[in-house]
Image (tube, rainbow, N blue to C red; front, side, top):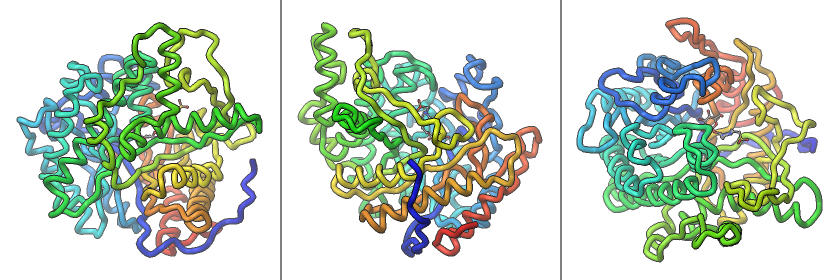
Length: 478
Ligand code: GBH
């Protein structure tokens, strides 16, 4: 498993987009300022504080609500061409519905976008990075199919308000974690536990809501604004544990569960057949009258097909897969239905948290698989990065090594395998609120002092490494 490939020092293409990524709840703070409404993370941290490490909250986070100019100055220093950030739905629409727009929230994003433009930086905007308005959650959130209308209205408003300056749109950040962790396992907001049922209903409404936003853009905005609308998939690479046929097949089934549940509908109009078959089979054995994976009607299939201009890929690590049926035939859930188990090798360098293992070759294999499976789509790496759990580690050589070796494998995938990768936004610009892990995990190339009211930002060594990569468009051995 050692990465024997030499560092690829061939320059990245001139138009390759280099940037960094963040998300609203993780950095903004100002959780109830200037008319912002409550979302599911505000609700979670205030009503269920022990669900987050150290009872941390995003109430203030990095205070980017007030310090956005400082953030943009950091971006300018790095020399990025793009900044990926997300909009807080309830900052714009405090009740979730599009009937009442909060002008002060609109102004915040107008200011941020203007500051970026004035510094020659293009925005890449995620509409939904895990912040369901609490009002809509109380109506079921992703389990209510009216969500498709609510999200469509919100997306339309954003295209109208910001679309003259923003041409790169992403609808949802990571349907997998949203549905499997939010509505299946119940370990991310809204902490809803319905494995094998709720998570699949969530997935259906989510892809239809994406398609709604895409159609709205296509019908009303595209000809004038000339932008693109994508979605972001979170995917590890799944490597078979052994050379046995059953493990090789299990790894492929796992890949299709991750990609075939969300991306296949948006490209081909339906779930991958292997996903449909597996879930239908188990559902039947369990006595269900119909598959727990809700089907799309023919009309929905037509509506879904071809609604993806670009795939955003969040990738961090690799897992080993072996075929294994759950001992309890009545068990339900995404991974149970998959009939495979995943683990990580102790030979792989470990970062700050359990799942963070450094396996740079995994990203090249994954990119190649996506190219092959989905007919060479346009891919933007919307997240990739390394976490440690040290309080203030400025000499972050392990992060530099991660960035360098992953980018080298991305360059190989482009260069040697012909994968169409158009850009890379590193996670993350600065240390921030890492969901249920609170402030214990540090992904930033800037350190943030969460003990100081100033939220002082200090650059790490990796910031200068990345700056150099961007300036030279080449990987070097720093
Ligand atoms: C991204 O999710 C998020 O988009 C971003 O907000 C976050 O800060 C960043 O990662 C760093 O964590 O059950 O083994 O999958 C990455 C996907 C999904 C990875 C949940 C960790 C839990 C462990 N994450 N997963 S596992």
